[in-house]
Image (cartoon, rainbow, N blue to C red; front, side):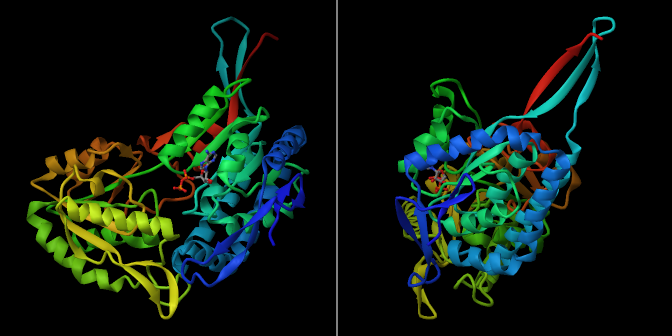
Length: 481
Ligand code: ADP
C-alpha cells in the first residue's frame, strides 16, 4: 500500500486505486492511496506554512538538496526505468532515457539555485538606481499527465523548488507508481516539512481544491486541451484573486519530407517521431507531409522498416513499441483508425489490436500507417496520442509548408531536407514552438526551453533557464541613496 505524502507524513487515503501493468493486465503493481478533498486542503496548508522556511534556506542548501535528489534518480536508473516501463508501458530503452532526463533536470536546477540572476538599470532620475530582482511565487500546484510520469513531474518540481517555491503535486491517475517513487526520493532530501506534498487521487474528488485553494499562487499543468481550459478558467475566476498558470497541451506535429531529403534520415525521423513511446508523446509526428517526387520511395522505405518495430511487453528484450497505456486509450486509437478508413485514407500497415503477446494479455496495437490522407481529415487534425501516422502527399515545398501549418496546434514541427535554404525557410515559417531540421519532432534536450504556440501551450516556457519566468516574480526596486 502506497500512501500520500502530506506535511512530510505518509497519509492513508479514503480509498485506493489499483495500478495495472498495460503489458500484462494480470500484473498488479500496487495499491495507491486516493486523497480526499480535506487531505488536499491539508497539503495546501502545509505548503503555505513551509513557504517562508523554504524560502529562507540559502541557495547552496537548496542546491545540495536538489543535487541529492538528482543523484539518487541517476543511481537508481535501472530500477526506476523498470517501474516506468511496467507502469506506463514505455519500452525499456525509452524508459531509461526518461529516467536519465529526470535526473539531469534535478542536477541542472541544482546549479540554477546558485545562479539566480538580477539586473541593475540606470534611472532616468539623477542619483536613483533601478534594481530588478526575482522572488519565489509561493505555493505551486503541479498537475501532470501519464505519458512522461517521471520527466514531466521533474521538469516542473525541480524549478519550483529551486526558485524557493513549495509544491503540491498531483500526478495522473494512471501512473501513481512513478510519482510515489519520486516522492519517496524527495522525502529523504531533508526539505522542511510541507515543502513538497504528494496528493494522488481522482481529479473529480480533488480537482477543485487543486485549482482553487486560496493558498496556491501558481498552477503548472500538462495534459489535454480540454482540461487546460478548465485550469485557465479556474485560475482566472478563483475567488480571492487570480492564480498564475502555465499550460502544456496537445500537439498535431508535422514532419515534412522534401524532394531533396536524405531518405534514410527522413524514414528514421518518421519512425521515431510517429511510433516510439507508442506515439504517446505530445511531440509525436502523426502527420507525414511528403512531396510528390519522393512520396512513393518514402512510403516503400517506411513499409520496409516498419516490421522492425517489434511490439511487445515494454520490459522484454527487443521490444521497440510497448503497449498503449490503457483500454480507453486503445479504444480511442482504434476509433481514429476507423475514422481514417471511413474518410477515405488507405491503411497500408498495422492498425489492429493484439489481445496478447507471448501469452501476456495487454493493450497492444500494431503501429498504423495511412497513405492518401488529406489535411482536413480528422486523423490529420485531432490529436490521436497513439502509434498512428498518416502520409499527406503534396506537390511541392510551398504546399508542404501550408499543410504543415494547417492545424490548431503548434508544439513541434520537423523538416527533412539537404537544402540549407529550405531548412532556413521552414525554420522561419513553421508555426511551432520547436522546429527540428533532419531530426524527429520528439526528443528534446533537458536544458533547452520547451513549449509551443496556438492551442498547444499557454504561458511561460518550461525547462532550462526559461523556467525562471514562471516560477519567480519580478520585483523592480527604485533606490534613492
Ligand atoms: P490526459 O489525456 O493526458 O490524461 P487530462 O487533461 O485528462 O489529460 O489529465 C492531465 C492531468 O490533469 C491528470 O493529472 C488529471 O488527473 C488532471 N485533471 C483532469 N481533470 C482535472 C480537473 N478538473 N482539475 C484538476 N486536474 C485535472
